[in-house]
Amino acid sequence: FVLPGLYMMFEKGTPPKKKRNKDGSVATIFIIFLFAGLGAPAQTPISLQASIDTALKNNLVIKNEQLKARYQQLHIKTSAVIPQANLVGEAGQINSIFTDTKFSLAQSFNFPKVYTSQRELFEEEWKSSLLNVNVKEGVLKKQVAQVYYGILYTEEKKKLLQYTDSLYTAFLKKAELRLAKGESNILEKVFAEAQLGQVSIQLNQLKQDSVILQLQFQLLLNTTFLLVPGKDSYHMDLISLPDTARLKEHPLIKSIRHQQQIAEASIKKKK
Image 1 (tube, rainbow, N blue to C red):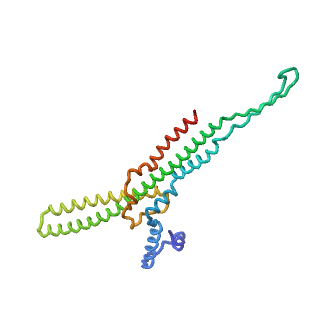
Image 2: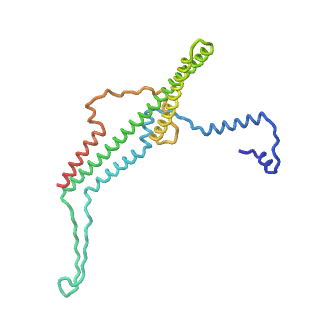
Image 3: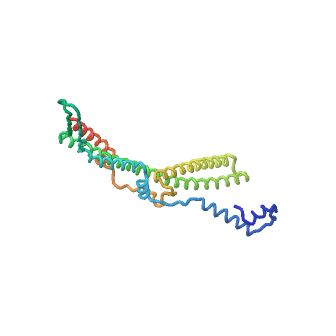
């Protein structure tokens, strides 16, 4: 960034005069901070439900499964499609010395039971594709929730480590002061330094984990906006008590059970 006046002075070969200007220094510092502020992305807090809704809306795998389900639904209409008729024409001496012309029309079709069985098979495949959508959505919801609460857990752990770091920093200063006055030995100072180093290592590792979790969160939501979990979502809400009888309604269990129905419909079609 060059001011127009400075550019003209350098172009003419005249070096600028060295003159200290407090106003100019303040203006330069202001411009630097202004550009630095523009480069920093703003963090927008988001709730867990909004995170799940955003992920379901933007996830390309979910969209692909939905398109497959739509294709299977439209494919049902092709179960009763009859093949095209064949028109055959012949010309020449077929049965005598005279020139004859012969046309024949052929149309093939199956018994109605075949079309019924084929429609049932296509319907089962469509239902299976819908279950696959539910399975993919369930997996995505679980991943979003895990990363969401993982970020909150990391932030709270970081606060505890920072508080611990401040305690050991104060303890180290007192140990150095006690050592200088001869009220303690070197072991107390070494112990404080060792504990402070351990806390520093954990803080650095925690910062790396926080960056990785934030990247995972952005990938799951598939958005360019910098979204962070809201500060008011520290507790996981248990919707209902675990019930083993509800395992049968799990999307993955239903999808596996439906594969058996597809196999039975395929066997029925071949009979």
